[in-house]
Structure formats: structure tokens, C-alpha cells
Image 1: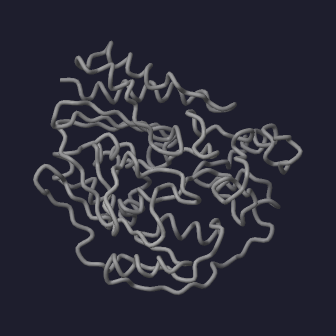
Image 2: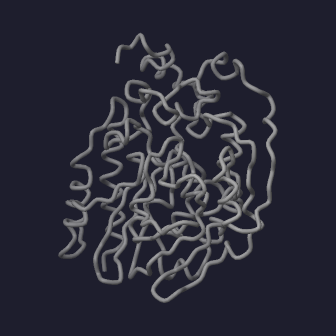
Length: 358
């Protein structure tokens, strides 16, 4: 694509200049834009919408299946997207799930830990059941966002949150990117320091921002919805503005996580106490003795690394963990500004696997 087809603030030189400001922060990316680009044409108040309190997941699914409606659990992601009018169409109705009974529980069911979609991230992080059987997930929830957000946000909302790509998140569709029906991804030649290092997914170079996603993939979890059950490894996929395979009229109800012998989670973020991951990693030794490794923050979806897993089949030690780290990044194709993430991913894989060592 020729440079002249893009607005001037997409150009790498301009983006690097804007990003040098001390005000630049990944969680508030629009601060990197010039004042006129941040404020021109923006509303000062959120638009009106109808609020509906659902009494069951099936009722909520029925309402959103009719179109132009969205579901809300904790609201920590959705309300920000509505305020900035990030979505291509504004919903007429927001269906609140919080009052649905029985969807916030955490229990054991045979060889699985069952977590309701409305379980708060803080509750999952502090659950003795989760910590004893799938500690990587507990640690992932404990490292997500801030304490305030963890007490509001739900695990169902975390797995369904939209990408944090700052081109996608710029208000009022100033960048009509691939996820919004456009024909290009501005990150390909723009400021891509936090984007994918494993290429694109359907033309999008965003990186997954879920802390729980790699843990669920490594643990072999299954996401249950009102229509079906989807393995976590297949759940996260570019789907328009969504970052998952959910269809219209489909709501996540629970997550089933197989009990693991041992699991671990590592995260690298600019600020340890609050930020989304630059990269994260989870590894698990399952009940059958096999080891699974998954990376997040390096591709639009979490990446399970079979090549890294192959390096530790004979056991986990300093040497095999280092080889697994090398194997995990052998297929990396970093963009112009994010080659540094390759070394971060390599190191996270090694450190996470060493936590599983006997």
C-alpha cells in the first residue's frame, strides 16, 4: 500500500515523535495523538441506550440475537468502548448479566474446575479451589489490571474483551481498520511496538491483551456458551470487532478447566501493577503428564507452542527450558518496532517452564 493513502499520523516518523511524550501510556493510547486528533468531533457524553436486566443467559442470548444489542457483565471493557464510540454501530440495548443467579460460582466437578462466567477476577485469583488445581489461571487473574478492576471485571468478560490496539481504539472510527471492515491494518507500517510478532490474523496485526487466555489454553480449558462448548485453543480468533468465535445470540456461561498437576504463569508489562501485557506465558503439566505452553500478547490470539512442548518431553531443566524458549520464537516475524518482544517471549517461556520443574 502506498504511504499517501494513509493519514499523516499513521506514518512511522510521526508516530515515533508523538510517542516520545511523557504523557504517552499504553492504557490511554489516544494521549499520543495531537490535540485536534483526540478531540475533533467527539461527544462529551455517552449516547443513550436501553438497559435490560436479564434473568437468564438464554434470555440475554435471545435479545442480542435479534440484533443491535450487547451484553455487559462487569462493564470494565464495554463502557469505555461505548463512550469512545469504537464500535461500527452503537447498540440500542445493553443487556446486563449481573443479576443472573448461579453464574458466578467456582466449584469442582470430577476432574474439572467449573468457573461461572460472572465470577469476578479477584474471586478466581483468591479461590483455594483454583489455586490448588490450576494455579496458572489464579495467577493470571491476580496479575490482570488493578485491584479495583479485578473486583468489578469478570472472567467471562476478560476472555471476551476486544483488542487494545490503539488504532482500533481511536474513537469515532478515524482508522477504518481490518477489524472494522477496512482493507488495511495501520499497524503494519505505523507504530507497532506492542503488536503481533507472529504475523497477521485475517489481515490484523493486533496482539491479544487477555491475561487469562494463555492460561486457559495451556490448561486445556473449554468455554461453554448458550449454544456449544469450544476449546479455549479455538475460542480466540479474529471475528470482526470481536476477538473470539462467538456468534450473534451467543453468551458465555461457564469455563471448565481440567485439573493440572502443576501450572505457572509469567507476565511482562510496562507497569507491573496495572498494565496490559506486552507479552505473557502460561505452562501446565496436565494430569496425563504432558506439558502445554501458550504465549499471549504476541499475536491476535494466544499461541500454543507445540515446538516448545516438544523440547521438554524428556523432562524440564535449565537446558531444555532454554531450548523450548528458542523453539517458541523460531517462527516469529516481528514488525518494524517490536523485535524486542521476541526476546521477551523467549525468556518468558523459559522462566515459566522452569516453574514446572520438579
